[in-house]
Length: 171
Image 1 (spheres, rainbow, N blue to C red):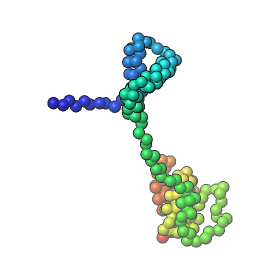
Image 2 (image 1 turned 180 degrees about the vertical axis):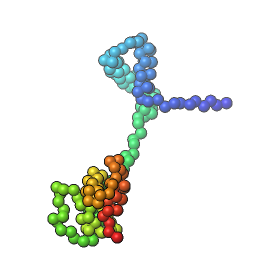
Image 3 (image 1 turned 90 degrees about the horizontal axis):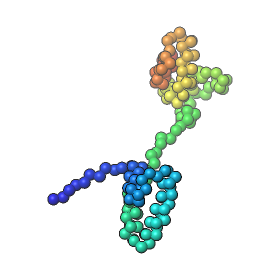
Image 4 (image 1 turned 90 degrees about the vertical axis):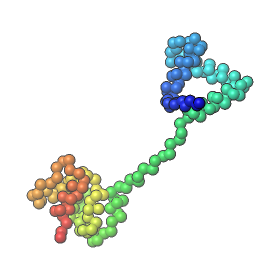
């Protein structure tokens, strides 16, 4: 008849605490301060290194326990490559050249300029490359000119893009 032992894996911290308590009890050193524990670790290392020279089985046991405690190397997860909006915009094909005067970096970007530049088919894709804050500014400009109710402060990026498209795309 065989017996199956269920071995729960303990953290290295828990095992270190248990092993230190057992060692202190065996040596009759019941209450040690953290600084004294460091000295005990040095004394233990020195005495074990002497003993290993005479006892290869002890060396094998220590190595076995060390390899058991050693964490397995983690495989690094690949992170999705970040593309800036300008990189994404550069992938779009221009349908029409737009006058540089319409691009003013100090004012809110006009969605009609983007629409003229990339055309109807790529307009929503072009808008999706822009940050949410920029889209909200564009929606505010459209709301002021069209008199319509724009999406609220908690609106998602998709809702704002739909709103901008509704008032910009020409049929």
